[in-house]
Length: 311
Image (tube, rainbow, N blue to C red; front, side):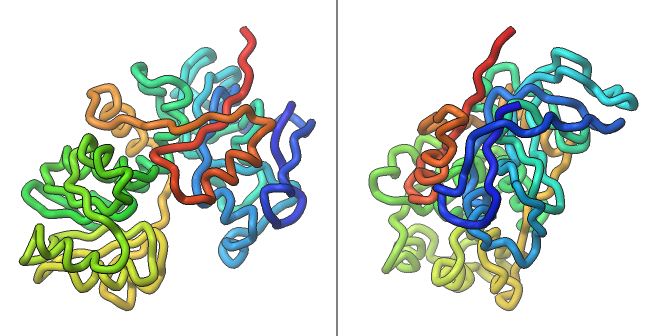
């Protein structure tokens, strides 16, 4: 099959497009014909070796953890899915090797859910990692409930845009940081936009003098520390970007595959509670360009790579 691989850590130029062996299908996995796979910041951070301390690479590595596609072969013990089913998945292993930037991926059923019927394959590919991250942080780490005021950083980005929508669904008032060019988009998602950068604390305090009940950090560093200072008494703090959050009394979160959570996201998508904005798509062979765009950090929503489909 055709796939994207890298044989050593490095920049986008280490990504190669070519033939690799077809994946083997275990008894509790299904073979998925990939229609689309989204790019997440963790993909290029893994490629550059930033996660080497926690994830062993088995080179050559096929990048990518998000997928949407069609089941073409269920494993021998699989009853959850059948040939022809359209699925989405957050197909992460505990090491770097067999990702989703390929024509096929063997996905354990614990990583999959049915694809929302109202989303395109490109939109659906952008839902798993970002949606699971947002849902798990908001409901498990921050325990957001109706009436809470929630601060979401990078609210126009992949995780942030899903976090805004889910937090609003949970009944929260949401304040979202974003560049001025994205303020209208953030309002459409349901948040009150504020400019990030110097003076952020004052701008948030102008909206919520008493502070926020929960802060969702996706940036780290100074942004995380400002978030801690913006909490109301008893406020909760969580970060997906900076382990220093623990010393500040908050929670560090790393998204986990969870079929039940993924099915819940699919339901929310079909109820039009959450949408996925795809800023740009690239063909699989141009995955390096997709990585470059994602790394610029100015994407509104998601960058997606697509795989040709033949019936």
